[in-house]
Length: 122
Image (cartoon, rainbow, N blue to C red; front, side, top):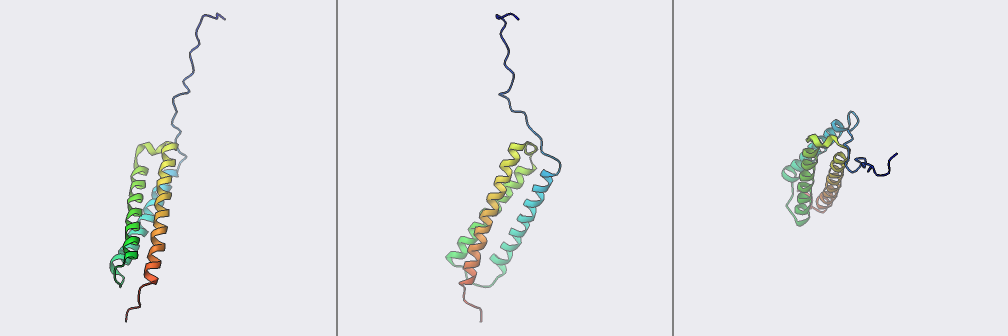
């Protein structure tokens, strides 16, 4: 082999997209929409139909629930994009979804504390 011939580097710098296995995308879309539906139903009842007065705790809980809804919508938007078939993009979408679930849990806990501290209706 001639030593003067330069070797071309193999194109390892470009990351090849790796598609998801079948069903992963559909599964996360279903999970996001179920959690979003629960969040909206809970917020509707707790925020608008339940008796009681608004307190600073209930305002904080409502704000946290709104933040969870926003995060869930972002996760849903990401999961519906074509780019989400790539594993790295899918992982980011899952992190958005997990963050929304954690924020929702915090909001629910604050709502429980706010409701438990409310006086009983007469």
